Image 1 (cartoon, rainbow, N blue to C red):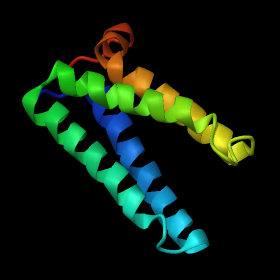
Image 2 (cartoon, rainbow, N blue to C red; image 1 turned 90 degrees about the horizontal axis):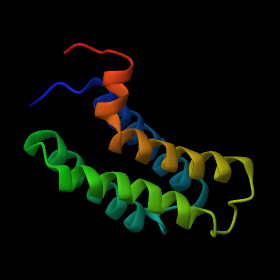
Image 3 (cartoon, rainbow, N blue to C red; image 1 turned 90 degrees about the vertical axis):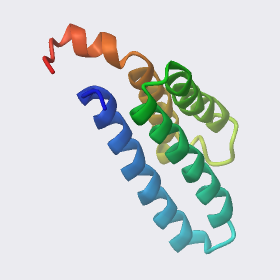
Image 4 (cartoon, rainbow, N blue to C red; image 1 turned 180 degrees about the horizontal axis):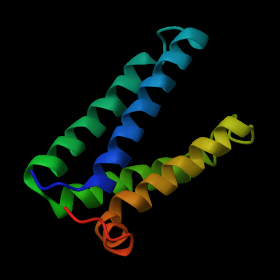
Length: 113
């Protein structure tokens, strides 16, 4: 596995945020939204494993697209006008951009691996 610190950091941050959101939603709403959240989390894990172990540009594109599309769809969801909704929209779009351009970011900040 190639060392890609920006990509790995973005993925770890994504997983932490998703797990925290799953716990918060479960505590607030209960188990009714848990299956859809587990489905989203599973899709992300599959894409992450694909990206990290196969060095796949297609997987990288799909993972970035997943986050950007999630952010764009989040704009039209109920509650997106609240501060947390806006933060999550920005988070998804920003993480998608960071994931897609991680090589360029690493080169610009001169991370030697």
